Image (cartoon, rainbow, N blue to C red):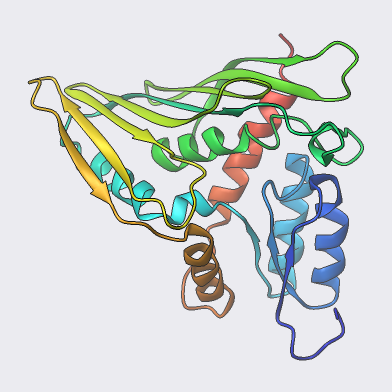
Length: 260
């Protein structure tokens, strides 16, 4: 199908460790790349894929569906408005019970591990809310005895005096949340990263004054919204934000290589 003249873009939904080879093959065939997160397993590979796509007049996009949901867009608006004052810190947590051990997420050879799966989400949230300048201050990753991959971790990053506290992992109770601590209050988001299309969500705003309120968010299919946005970028009706992709890759790579 890569030689088909009526195919403009390829969506890569294979295990993470195969993304780079498949992505370069698609770009070499003149196809835009829409790729499951993360784009590749290393910062260098992601930089090379972005450069290859740009040189070929193509785009390489990374699946970040939750950023396209009205819930996250409203969170971004609240943060930017500084209705509760400047941001002090962003905390993101995404974790869930173990999947079957036959799942590719438990295979090092296939690019598995909690950081490149569950960890992607709080990293992507932090870079989207605090910007691309986040610098890693410390990180810890854990693995089960005899296991092939990391199964969880935590990281602290900062930029401009604002902190990002990130937690993720397999084999733990379900957490799927973002909390933004501001000078004059707190913004809390549940079901921040993963949610079915039929689910109505909300944002809870707790100002220092104590007059808490809730912002209801209607149900939305964030995958469909993301693909609509990808299509606009692909046909040139919206800009290709390579900085967002690479800032996530940079922070993920820093966590992966941090010597604790």
